[in-house]
Structures are given as C-alpha cells and as structure tokens.
Length: 128
Image 1 (tube, rainbow, N blue to C red):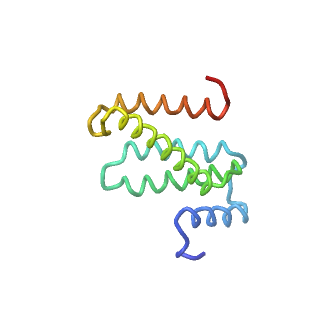
Image 2: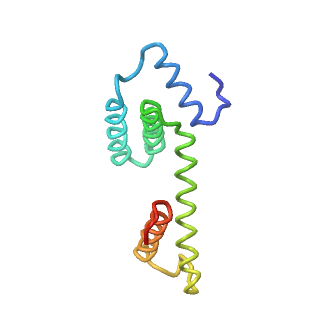
Image 3: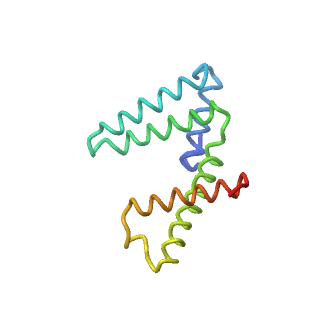
C-alpha cells in the first residue's frame, strides 16, 4: 500500500484490504459502535494523546462510511461545500448589516446559520 496516498484514500484502501481477507464487521452497527467508542476516547484523552485518538476516530468514521456504501471522500467534499455555503450566508447577512463575524456573538452567528439552513431547505424542496 502506497504511503503517498492522501490519508483518507489510504484509510479506505487499508480497510478494503482487511475486509477482503475477512477482517471486517458483519454490518454497520460494528463500526458505528467503534465510532462512539473512539469519540468517548477523544473526549477523555489528555492533550498529548488527542491527535492519536482523533486519528482513531477518523479511521473508524471512514470504516463506517465504507460499510454503509458511502464514498467518504465524496461525503466530506459535499459536507465541506455545504459548510462553506452556509458560512458565506452568515458572512453575507452580517455584511448587509455592516458587521463582520468578529463583531457579533456566537449565538447571533448560530441564529444566522440556522436561518441559512432554512433558506437552503426551502430552495431545495420548494415552499416559503
């Protein structure tokens, strides 16, 4: 396995290889439980161990995606695009008021974020 692959691709390939020889969960519940376990470890880890624990969490999430038949690269690409679109909405709405994100509270930005989600859903599914 090439170490030059991007980390997400390499994780996918390693997991496919292991699954190919029978080292795999029977269904998606196994990797879902592993994601929950790894998240608990991340939250309980001392600072010096967080990187390793986050790595384990990400690896488990990639495995869950694989087991669900989801391309994790595509899923992450789309999630990033969605985040970017929503954050731009927040910035745009603040700019309309002559404000920047640094000028308002997290609660105010979160309210605009939720507003942006509603606008996005109306556009996607129609309605007012």
